[in-house]
Image (cartoon, rainbow, N blue to C red; front, side):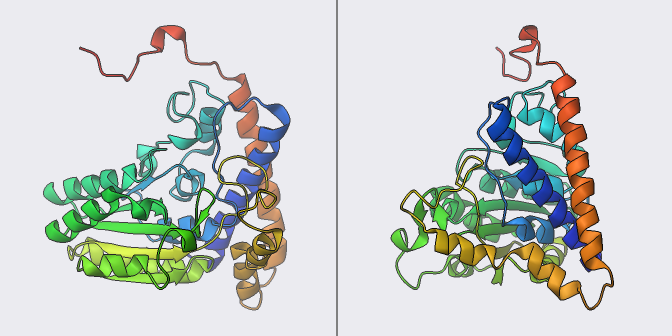
Amino acid sequence: MTTEPEELLRAMVRIRAVEEGLADVYREEQEMRTPVHFSIGQEATAVGVCAAMRRSDLVYSGHRCHAQYLAKGGDLTAMVAELYGRETGCSGGRGGSVHLVDLEAGFGASSAILGEMISVGTGAAWASAVAGRDDVAATFFGDGAAEEGVFHESLNFAALRRVPVVFVCENNGYSLSSPLSSRQPAGNSITRWADRYGMPGVRVDGNDVFGVYAAATEAVRWCREGRGPYFLELTTYRWREHVGPNWDYDRDHRSKAEVDSWIARCPITRATEELRERVPGIDRARAQWETESREELAKAIAVAKASPFPAVETLLSGAYED
């Protein structure tokens, strides 16, 4: 599958506009009673990887999952309804921001449990291989989750069984408020951990959507050919606080200067500048995409607010019963 460069930019613009709009209403209305983890600043990782996959491939994510959900083709209206806790939400109003699912789009699931979807994504890819299909799974996680035991167990199993899974580490340098430098020895490398399990892995600038897309295309091709797992470490940075719509450079663990230095490396600005000479009118198109995306979000919010909450009688629907 080949995606035009401007489509990658458009996808990032849409995700940014949606998340910034959600952050605004989250603060103002207090009607979304779910914790939210925004990917503002990290859009290139989700877009670049998901664009390299086909619809039948599966994506799994952690708590910071809006970008992956939308990049894989998840239903925006259903996602917004989920954030408002309505029964028309993609998880029936029961999961909130951190538990999204859209199997039709190939978004398998997301979870707030740190590292959980690393093993689930590996299992889904293994099931595909056992069934004789050539579908690939990608599982997204942060640098903090790479320090969990399930990370190493899953990489070991995937390498041993030649599982067609792409491990995608979104390394934004922080686990909550703990910087990477306080958690790992100097000179350590997450990508090198993957190498020790015998799988190919590359470290890519996660704010370069075109570089991410190229690396992900190679990773997906490798997996689809039955050659086993592939590892991507994508260096990036979240602009907002770990959980919530606000800025957090007044909380001691990072400075405004640090945040501003990464804002200057904005993946959307970078892609726009790269396309400016090749795609006439790209700035005008970007402005139009932003407007369209905000209008799309406004309609989704209106639909969500007009939708009912789950009925009390269905409280246990989907739960295991004796």
